[in-house]
Image (cartoon, rainbow, N blue to C red; front, side, top):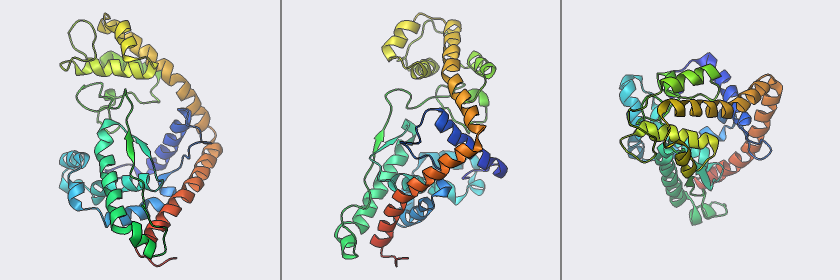
Length: 298
C-alpha cells in the first residue's frame, strides 16, 4: 500500500500469495504462514523502532530514492520512507538468526541490523534489568542468507534491470501462474544478443547470463552442468529448452495452487493457525520492548 493500488484486489492478492507459498512446498507444520496485518505486533513494534531510527538512515535507502523519483514527491506517502522500519519489525519480532534475501534486499537487512543494535544499546542490558526485565539483548542481530544462484533475477526485457512484479510490462517477468502459451511467448520475445554460443561470465552479455541463471535455478543443475549442456547452443535451441524447463517446473505448482484456491476453508485455517503461532512469539518480543522502553504495563 506504499504505492497506489486497487483496494478490492488486496485481499484477493493476499490469499493468492498464501496459496502460492503452500503450492511451492512450504510445509505449514514447520513454518507459520500468516497475514502480516493479522499479527498486530508488527505495526506496534514498527512504531517503537521508528522512535530510535534516524531519518538520515531512511533517506539513504536506494529503493526509496528510486521509487520516489519515479512517482514524484507529491505522490509519495510517508509509508514508502518508513517501510524499511516495518521490514525490520517483521524480522526482529521473531528473533531471526538468518533472513533469506536477494541481493537487492541486503541494504534493508543491514538497516535492520543497525536498528537492532541501536535499540539493544539504548534499552537493553542493565537498563532493561533495572526495569524488571531479564537483561541482555532485546533482539538478535540477524545475518543474511543469500542463495548461491538466483540471488538477483533480472528482467526478460533488460538484463541490467531486476525482474519485478511492479514493472510496467508483463513481458519483463515470468509469473508463477503464467499459462504455457504465455511462457512460450515471453521467452520467444525476451531480449538476447547476436553473439555466438552461450556463456555466464561475459559482462557484455547480461541477458545471456540471466537466462542461463534462470535455467540453472529451475533445473537444479550446477553452473558447470549448464555450461556443458548449453555453451554451444544457438538462441533458438536454448529458448526452446528454457521454455520447456519453465513449464515443467511451474506446472505442478500451478496444479497445487488451483487445488488450494478451490478450498477456501483450508486456506483460512492455515492462515488462522499461522497467525496464532506467530502472535505467541511476536507478543513476547513486543512485551519485552515495551518493558525495556519504560511503558506502563497493560
